[in-house]
Amino acid sequence: MDNVISVRRLRVRSREKTLVGPVSFSLEHGSTTGLCGPSGAGKSTILRALVELLPSGLKRDGELEVLGRVIAPGRGDAEQRATTVLVPQTPVVFGGSVLDNALFGLRHLLRASPAVLRERAERALEEAGLWREVADRLDAPAHDLSAGQRQRLCLARALALEPAALLLDEPTSALDERSRDKVEESIAALGGSRAVLLVSHDPAQVERLCDTTIHLDQPVETPTATVG
Image 1 (cartoon, rainbow, N blue to C red):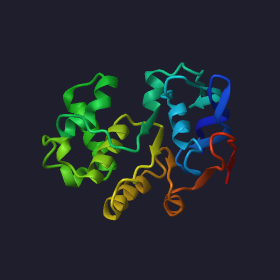
Image 2: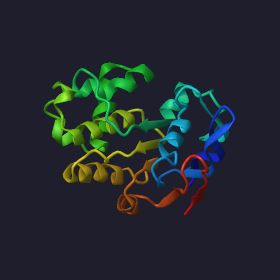
Image 3: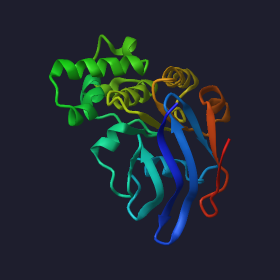
Image 4: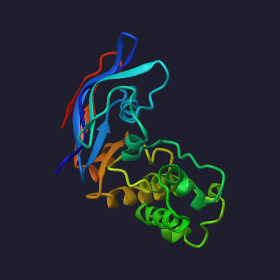
């Protein structure tokens, strides 16, 4: 399998202080990789570094390649953000309908007819495992959905961009068991179609869903990383 993302000695720094890293790993097309470690090890920070969404005052260094293209620190663009998409821990649902939410990012990226955009959105809802539950209420307010449905709607919004890599930050941490299982089913169904990097505090979930695991073994003051 070809690498979608390659990271070599990536660090996140605050001025001269290293907060996370150095860490090196690759994400292959069609693979699901777990990113694990204790609270405060910098798992979410690494995800944000991969999509150039670090908080103000933090910078990354090291090498980052996306689909063979070197991304210089601070030089991410719309193409990279569509290729590598982050789904945050807390589902962000905008005002408007279910369909509006599924289309949100796509409308800013793709110039196409409403019919083509809707087809992409519906396909993404199917891929996220949500279509059967919302097909008859696409025009209903997205805020009426349950927590688990909102998480899968955010997943669909990301999938509508047809990314090569999907970064999932604790996607089930706030869900009940039934909703967690549905989200896990959606993640498992992505296997083979794109590279997935999953941050999870649940070792059993990583075991269920992931082919490979990256371990961040130390808190951010003295970080180190191993791949296993």
